[in-house]
Image (cartoon, rainbow, N blue to C red):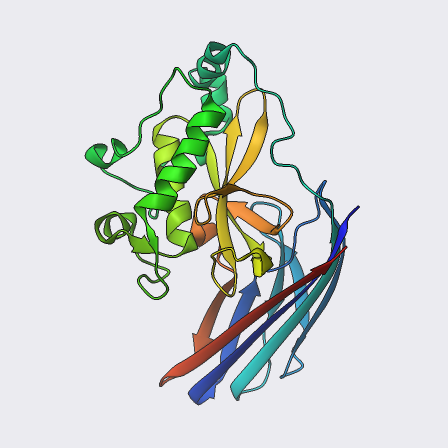
Length: 283
């Protein structure tokens, strides 16, 4: 039986000086797929600026706002209602012949098809010595290795709010061994890709009623492509597989592709931003 979800996303920006021109793009709408459907969207802003709908380079819906009048404060509120099917993350079969899946990883066609999610990016670059933090054991299935990587990342980084910023590089995460969900996801992506597994960064919401760790605004996890199985979600922040409590918004190579809010502001002085997200669900 599907669960009914209702998510409220709020943001308020306050500026010391007048803002004469501003453009925002919100990447916060739950994606419609085989497990999430009937998504209803309500979006408003305090300046009554027109909201434009668009699609980003990965095919995910975005909301764009461009106020026509000057302002010193603007607030946004989005409400999403949708149904989500119950997910059993272990509902798949593993081929007992492990070698066939590993052979696929070496196939040139496979590498070309998944090139985008095999390459290192600004946020997922690691040194050759750091790649040795986790190497696959080929006597185990690819899935079992990814479960082990999930566990390794969970134990390597201590979840610490405020220890990093959105632009903190992976070398600093590895050095400090502290971070938030974004950092767990970037480390998993880097080590998974270095072992030849296409892996994408995922942004969305997390129902934290089960005492999961995660950002109070948007959560981050990963999806890895396993030959003969497909894309599987892993949440290294909580050392679990992505399940019904994970509400996907989008995926990309790293955080830069999935930032929930991007903007260009023409103003002077300081500004303050306040975000909040609530996730409610029921059978």
